[in-house]
Each structure stands twice: as structure tokens, then as C-alpha cells.
Image (tube, rainbow, N blue to C red; front, side):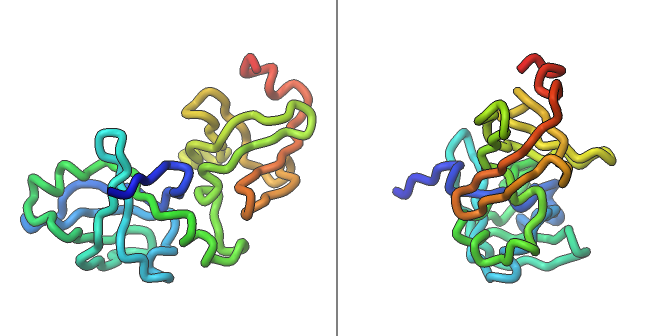
Length: 175
């Protein structure tokens, strides 16, 4: 059995409700690298274990949503068990995209290091629900603005995000 670790993965979307009775799922995507590189599977976290689910077929409905059918998921009940999960791919697929094609969501998993404060944690999510996009570090322990003015360097090879945060920003969050 292959052991998959979260640091070997990057998020590309989310599963939603079953679409029909034969196991199809509606999914939304923040990154379509799987389509561009023909990834044969997605990885979902099931009971704290990362499990590959092989694609039987998929069909885009819009630029960011698709219907997905996994091999061996053949009923609405089976598909419902997979609803609400983050969809991951191995980081090897990220390397196939050009850096200019990557989005802020591709920085999930990167370590954040501030010029003054040093290591701050790892990006665990990107909150883009408001006009001010935020990096969420260590599952909400720290939230930082995802703004170009604060980002000094993105080192894709070493998965490192170097920032220079304004004085006092970390104090506001008790850090």
C-alpha cells in the first residue's frame, strides 16, 4: 500500500453533491492542471488518509466546474460519501505548469517566511471570499493579506513564500 502525505499534494478543487444516480459528482476547480496534463486520478482525504480515486471520465460544464465519475463509484450513495472533500493532485503535476499560469491556490502547502519575523507557518488555505484575498496559515492560526506588495519571492522549487509584512501586522493577531 502506498502512503500519500499531504505535503506531497496540492489542492485543485472541491467535490460537491452527487449529480445523478450512477455516481457522478459535481466538482469546482481552482486549477485545471489535471485536464492539461491528463492526470489519471485525484486524491481525496478519507478518514485522515489520502486516497487516490481514478477518473473514469469527466466533463467540464463551465471553466471552473465539471461533472466527474470515479472508477468504482457507481451509486448516488457512494458519491455522497465523497461530497465536500478537497481534491488534490501530487505536486509533480504542479511542476508541469509554467509559474505564470499558477494561482494563489497553488501556494497552499508553501512555507511562509517573513523578512523580519522569520518562519510563520504553512499556507493551508486561500480565502478569496472577499475582495481582500488572504493566506490562511496553519489552519487559521494566522491570516495574512495575499497582496503583491508584501510578497518578495515565490520559490516554487523549495515551496517557499518570502514576504515582508508591514510593522505591527503580526502584533494585531497576537503573534
